[in-house]
Length: 399
Image (cartoon, rainbow, N blue to C red; front, side, top):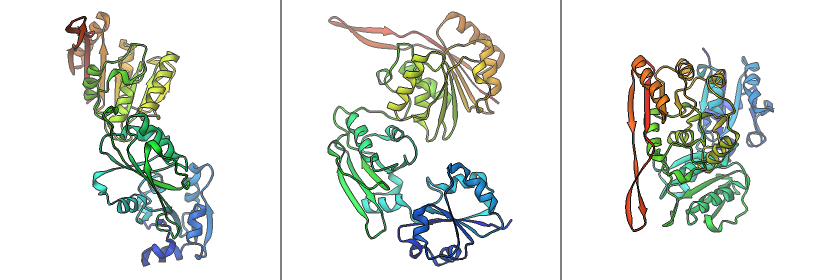
C-alpha cells in the first residue's frame, strides 16, 4: 500500500526548521490541513488549504475524502506525542501514513531547564481537565505540562499550594523557537504572571513538612476521601487494587462504587486507566465526583443505576470490582462481560454475601481470603487495638 498522507511536525521556525526531505514533502502537497498558526508558518507553499473541522472529530472523515491526493497535515512538534497524529493513526491504516516528527515543546522545555527527559513526567491538560495533573504532585517530582490556556499555570499553582507544595518552582515557556520566545519564572505560592495562551509549564515540586503525600501506589488514607462512612477502608483497598491489577489504559467497572475510592485509586495507579462507577445513590455519586476531581481523576464516569441492569451497553472491562449490591445475577453478568484475562474482585462483609462467595469460589475457582485489620487507638491514658470490620474477598482471573 502506498502512503498518501503525510503528518508533519512544524515548529515556530516554520519551513526553515524542517529537514530538506520533509520540506520537499510540504512543498509538493496538493492539500494542506492544519490550524491558522500552521498555515501561517507555511504560507509560502502553494496548496489548497483546509482548516481543522468543527467539531474536530470530523477530521477523520475529511481526510478520507482526500485520499488519492498528496495530503499534508501540519501539527505542532512531534505529531505522535499528545498530538493529532495518534488520533489519525487509530482511524486510518498506518501503512497509508508517513510521520515527520519535529523537536517538540517537551524536548525544548527540558533543554532550557537542563532536565533529563528520562527523569520527569510529561503531561497534557490541553483541552482536558486541568485536575488531571494533581495525581502527579509528589516530592522532588519534575513535571512538563502542555497547558490549556493562559489561566492554566495559575490553576496549577493553586493545586500545588493547596497540597503543601507552595514553594514548588514554576517556569512558563511561550513561543519557543520563535523570535518572541518568552520565559516566566516564579513559585506556586506567589504566582502572578500573566502569560500567553499557548505555553508549556515546567514544575519542580517542592514539598513542605506538612505536605499531603499522595503516592500513586494504592492505599491512600481514608480521610483523603469524602464519604458517609461506608467505603472500602485503606488497608482493604490496597489489597483490592493489587488483585484488580491496574494497567495502562485499562477499564474498570466499579459496581456499587459508593464514594469512588477504589475507582479513583485505580485511575491514579496507571497512566490513562479508565473507570466507570455504577452507583444508585445521588449523594454518593456526588461524593465520588468530588473525590475524583480532588485527587486528579476527573474523568471518572459515574452512572445512576444498579447491577446487573446498568451494565448493559457499557464498554467491556479489563477489571470489575463489586463493592456493593452483590447477587448471583450481578456476579454472572459481570463475569460474562469481563474481557479475557480480566480480573474480578468481590468484597463482602455480611454472612449472606460471604455464603454466596463460598459458593462462587467452589464453582469458579480463584482465591477466597478473609481480611482483618486493626488500628491502634488511644483510650484515655492507654492505647489499644480497634478492629475494623472483617472483609471476605473473592478474586479470579477470567481465562
